[in-house]
Length: 147
Image (tube, rainbow, N blue to C red; front, side, top):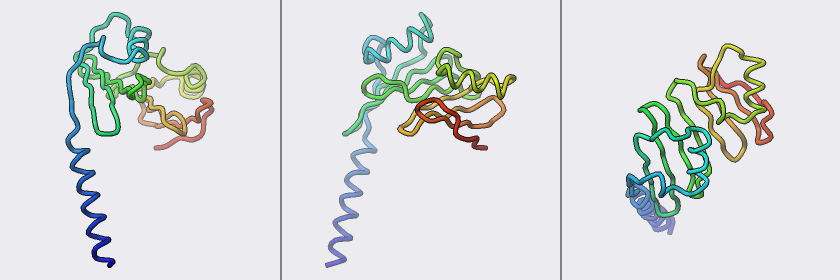
């Protein structure tokens, strides 16, 4: 009985992996992004044109990736809420960084710039030009430094 259960579990896992490996990636226009993503790009990047916008559809989710100048990449969820802004070791626009987090960084790391910021279910994670990673909760309060 245990062997049949293991086999069933492996078959289901293989099926799910096969489905997820078949993510559909499509280049889209800015106008095809959800309204939240369009507003975010307009607010923080003005009329600057992206190099490309990618829609990644999987069975249970859709994500969007917007890239500017081969350096800056922004990820959005299916509703157009930003998940990550990554400057690939170059600074990202200050306007993207929540005010309380920006203030903490300016006070404690005045010579550093933010090169990446992510938001997740437990809070924010930022990466600085010196390589330090700072974690903040959803209320934008500092939690810890990761090295």
